[in-house]
Length: 327
Image 1: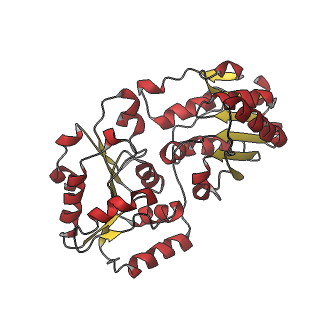
Image 2: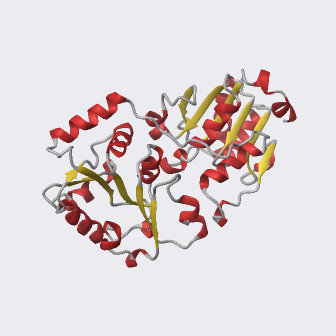
Image 3: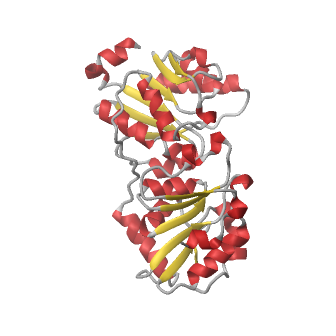
């Protein structure tokens, strides 16, 4: 491991693998780590392994050479570890970083004989060559800062300021503008995106208040509200779509790349703690984020929108009023 730190010149021409295979928000919050790796080793081959549902969003990112989906594998975790080891062995990486710990990852990296294996000291973490304590459940700092600790563990310097950015092409922006026009959206208006749902019911601002918020936004002169969400939320969106004659319903109609373009286009996103919250901050759009939990591991101190210009309203969710959010 010491060789990785002490000889950056030859290693800058080698292969680094970064693994993060869970949900949208968690994966987006590793972008500052990936950028720092690229700056430290500009000539290295940098591979990002992520959940296959997110591959389209990260392909072409300037800091990575390739984006590979985690292999679909059934059976016991031992079988999954063996299959992963065969994949990783064929790549001949010099360093692999596990941002979300799993037994099959740690065992697979060990079986593959990867010389530098970095991650958290849990789920068979003893098989790593460098491991750090997993204190994330304490919520003492932001998830981005926790992720950067993985780099410090191998002696990679972390600058004080790191870009958190996901680029959107001009073509994708033009496609989104055309879609809004086709839906009779007034593109000269102040466009406000609203994402009314979250994967965790404990993080859900009351849906009736989201409905009222959409009605109020639709009634404001010069404002066009746009409702966004995934295909799994299409039925829920149908119940809310009639809330205001100017409401544009894009739920289930956008790919992740198109959602990124949409969030870049709008003035602000109003949302619960969710993946689109982090996607908006990654494209530089201000967020009004609604948090209710006091659990340290789910606290906005750890999971709030990263960067400046955002507003977090943190109190019991049933105490957050529509007027507060509008203000």
